[in-house]
Length: 308
Picture: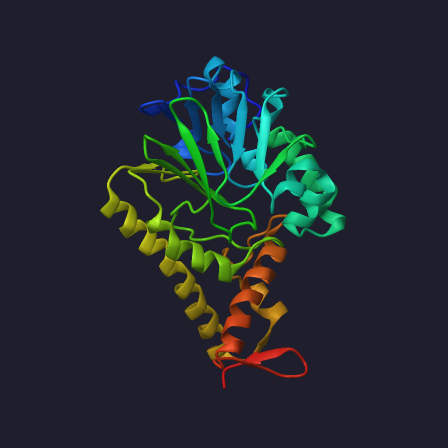
């Protein structure tokens, strides 16, 4: 998809409404690089959760936004901030620095400094990227009274350090962000990501009081709890599937981290993009750390991993 297509070039944007909450679907139900846009029409304040590419094509219903509450910070969730220069932007304190400056965003991603210029050019072109130095931080449990609608923040780290689920009451709509329940599975390949935290967040997610669950990407909306729980279980199972694939690689022969990265755990072998090697390295490293702690893998002084 071309993020810079002229307004009006898209077909009519599909939407779903739950009281004062509206969900505008991005292309292919918000499949990356797009996302799904949540807008809340409070009687006092109009708010939005994140700002994916689709926000650039909604028009007045989005452009009247006065408050943006970010569930987390990544380029695809900032693509409409440029349209809201006067809106108040709130970000979990653990992700706050990343939204405020490009240097902090580089650290957030964990990309090599040599790749930073190409990455910046990419996200400026495709995601209208612009930092928001005026953004304010919020903590776990923060709340916003919008007038007849109320938002509460549930910190659910893992994808990023500040990843947060945002729940709107009385509608019972939970924006679960990039716990997106896709077939790809959880992503925890950035410098600010944590496999350990992601595992804990996936266990806690069903405890959040909600009647509707909205993902940033691909799945869109769940209104049936059993369907939501089935897809959450399949998504969670990807973590153990990756662990088993990693063990299978080591069963073939002992390998260094670099050799494991070359074989790929997240992406197909040979897949290349600016972030792939760093994401694979961090993802595999986190799984190896768990396996080492459990005594299921050993490493020698040369950095070669093997089964006991």
